[in-house]
Length: 204
Ligand SMILES: Cc1cc2nc3c(=O)[nH]c(=O)nc-3n(C[C@H](O)[C@H](O)[C@H](O)COP(=O)(O)O)c2cc1C
Image 1 (tube, rainbow, N blue to C red):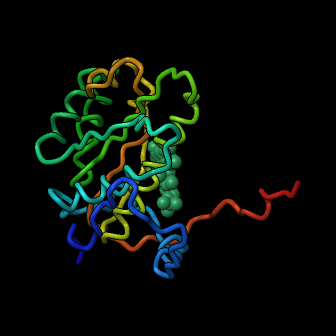
Image 2: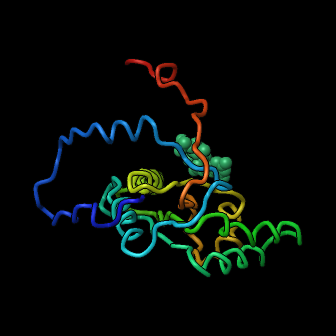
């Protein structure tokens, strides 16, 4: 049974003391064991209303150089899923890909499109703004998992197609950091091969 927004502590006020240290065995276990759900393994319910808002609020606490908030969320849920799929179908190359596009957002109850709005800035490189959008995506996954939902971070052709981005309502400079599909897993995922930290670590 997923947790509700009531399980998420309120946002601290600006300037309020927070936790530089936050021992949490549950967080360690979650990070050691959580897995994404394959997009074909989602059923209802997904997070909605105040519960989804709480997940987005946690994701928006991602590190963000310069406090720019260089990203935004587009929630694709309910009949918005078919409309977003139709928008992609409208810019698809042929009838077969249009059919696949129509099903894009019907596979899970909810999809959050994380949009990177990185733009030239006097002090903060665009690269750092894009990294922040990636951190938002991961934070969204972690928050959704901790609340008891399955999640899956996908991209795909629409992210790299200017017409598709425009069809989904993005401005010309915006990019899609990810489609985060959310819902109830219908299968228990198994572990995948992981990049080994040791083999990728050196000491200076
Ligand atoms: C930016 C980004 C885009 C991704 N796009 C896809 C995708 O389009 N299709 C796919 O099968 N997996 C994609 N993945 C991989 C999955 O989201 C996920 O990382 C992988 O299945 C392992 O999941 P887990 O580590 O959360 O268990 C993407 C990952 C990232 C970081």
